[in-house]
Structure formats: C-alpha cells, structure tokens
Amino acid sequence: MTDRTVQPERLSPLHQKHLDAGASFTDFAGWQMPVRYSSDLAEHHAIRTTAGLFDLSHMAEIFVTGDAAGAALDYALAGKISAIAIGQAKYSLLLSPEGGIIDDVVVYRTGESRFTVVANASNRFPAAEALAARAADFDAVVVDGSDQIALIAVQGPNAVAIMDRLDGWDLLIAPRDLKYYWSTLGSYHGSQAMVGRTGYTGEDGFELYVPVGDAAALWDELMAAGADLGLVPAGLASRDTLRLEAGMPLYGHELNLGTFPVQARLNRVVNLKKEGDFVGRAAVEAGPPEGSRVLVGLRADGRRAGRADYPVRDLDGAEVGVITSGALSPTLGYPVAMAYVDPTAAEPGTELFLDVRGTSIPASVVALPFYKREAK
Image (cartoon, rainbow, N blue to C red):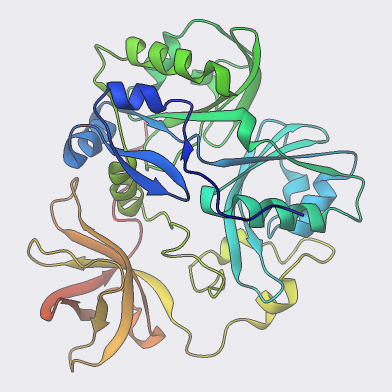
C-alpha cells in the first residue's frame, strides 16, 4: 500500500540552479518549483520567439513492461496504445469506471514490450496505483520510476538549433530528425536517456529524460548551448499562459474526475473502435447527463481577464458557465479564457459576459486553440 501521509516538501534536483538564477518559487503538488525567473511576459515571449528551458522534474514517469504491456495499457487507458509504433508517443486519458478523468497522460513506446507513461505530478500516486491494478491480470509489470528521472524541456523556435549543439548524447535518432510526438532512446554521458519531440507550449521543442544525477550538467549544457540563441530559463507562470493560448487543458482546471472526455472536447482521444473493454468504456458510451456543460474558448474585450472560477453570463445576466483558466494573452494582446458553459451557449460567435469581480466584460465564444504556430 502506498504511504499517503504528509510528506516533506520536495525539491527538484535542479533546485540550486534555480536559486542561482534568482527564481521565485511556488508550491506545486508538494514540490517547490520555479514560478518565474525574470518576468512572466519576458519568459512567455522568449518561448514564442526564441527558446525557453523548463524544469519538469516533478512530473511522474511510470514504466509498463512485459509481453502483454500493450494489451494492459489498452485496457487501462482510453486510446489504443498497442497500435503505436516503437518510438512513437500518444496523448491519452486514464478514466475512472464512471467515465471521469483520473489524469491525462503521454505514453511513449520505447520497445516492443516497453512503455513509459508520463503523468501529472499531482496525480502520480492515483495514476500509478490505477495502472498497477489494471495490469494485474496481464503479463505486465508496472514500476513507478519518478524518483529516478529528471525531465527538462527546451521549447521554442530555436530548440532544434540548441539541441544540435549538445555534446554527450548518443541517440538512435538525431533530435532534429524526430517527427512531432516521436522519441528516441540512447544515452547522455553514458547514462540511459530519452528525448521526445513533445511539449506543452504550442511551440516546437523537446522533452529530455535523464537520471536525476545528470540533470544539473544537462541544464548547464543547454543554457550554454542557447546563450546566443535567446534561451532563457522559464517558470510555471509562463508555461501556464503558453498552454492556455495553445488551448491545452490543465488537470484540476479543465480536467477532473467529474468531467467526461466529450465535455472537454477530448472524445477524439477515446478510441471506441478498439476491440475489447477498457476501464470507463460503458460510462463513456452512455455519455454525461443531458445538458452537461462543455469546454469552449472565450475571447474578451479590453484588457481585464477572467480568471478561474469567475462566472460566465448570458446577455440577460443568467449564469451559463464558469471559467477554468484565463489570462491576458501575451502573444495576442487580448484576454482569453477557457470555460465550461451550457450547450446552448457553446456555439462559436455566441456573445456572453465574463463576471470579473462584479464587472461585466463582453466576450464571445471562439474556436480553440487561440494560438497556433505557423507550420514550417
């Protein structure tokens, strides 16, 4: 049984690097993580125009191995994980039997019978426990390796150029040759490592998985490689505005145990065509209660942004929804938000009001994402 008693505050293996860089910190899922180094805006703009470096070592890495590892994950998750190729990554959902979302995860297939499931820090133990329970009847082993792995992400238009300059890597595929949502195994200064062309910012970039003992050296090498390419360390505040502009959900805001995938517009992630059962299938097929709220994007007038839990009202002043995430978009220059609203208020173009501390701010429903980088 997992010990869920109160644990001491967790520190990243890069904590001293953050202190040296003048970071401000915040508690995130029991970890002290950098929220910013200079300013939220400067870090946000760097990732949109040059590059930024994130410490994501608080994320959870759960290894699923064995001859039936793919079948076990097909049963445990909403997607058909056994169908992805070696090296490919896939976004998926870990559902409750009632159809709610325990966590959203990224799964990397690292071998014929090896997978790495990356879960949110706040859901590490629920995710690991659910995966282990669901794999119990399969020829598969589930191991929580989170404490041994550090995760660093380099994101932005100059990410490829920065990766090209790194020494110490011996990879099966050069990072620049990876397609989006593909990965490669190899080593970093002799230790087993993985590089994925994945991210949570709406920009090109890479996520680098190395042993915790190699994290500080890798951070320094990345900062040196990007010194003349505009690379800056970036904190959780800019990560949040970047993912909001890109229309990416955040667990605890857009996703939770009471939310069905279809409400979050993630029905495409649920593969109802795959053979066999999976946890939550019957509930997903039945669907949420009629009239359940759905996730939309909102663009507001002026400069005042709606924030999480602010009401959304119709033209008559009746509450028709609630904001889950909102900010003044640094890239676009106007307020944006994601919100759950009644289906009658979800059509793009619908005129609504954000209740910002008693002031009604005009807003309209728009398609997500708010921002999408230009393809090259």
